[in-house]
Amino acid sequence: MHCPNVEVLVLNLSSSTYALPNFIATMEKLKVVMIINHGFELTKLTNLSCLSLLPNLRRIRFEKVSITLYDIPKIHLKYLKKLSLWLCHVDGVPNELEDLEVMFLKLYRVYRKSK
Image (cartoon, rainbow, N blue to C red; front, side, top):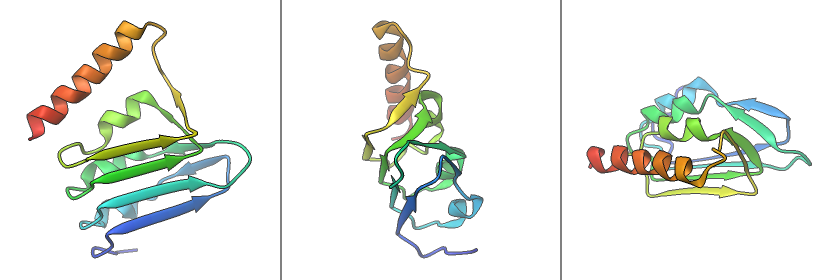
């Protein structure tokens, strides 16, 4: 599938696992991604790296999904303004608050360098 002019993508899910399709990386004008799970249990979301190739991505909303903390820096941060995690589970969160602070400081630095 080739959809270079799509600006908003809404995926409604109800499965236990979901891998983002690779064709998302071809949506060059994509600005908003909303991934909403309507199932009773969280959806394990994979292949977030396809979002890293989207230069115009501004907002991402995950709802009732499970991701790993280490997947977030894979997302293209140059123009990302808002990352919303609603009723989500984030694996890989360090037990120590200090470790989490260091991780987000590194994420902030990546963002600052990309400006």
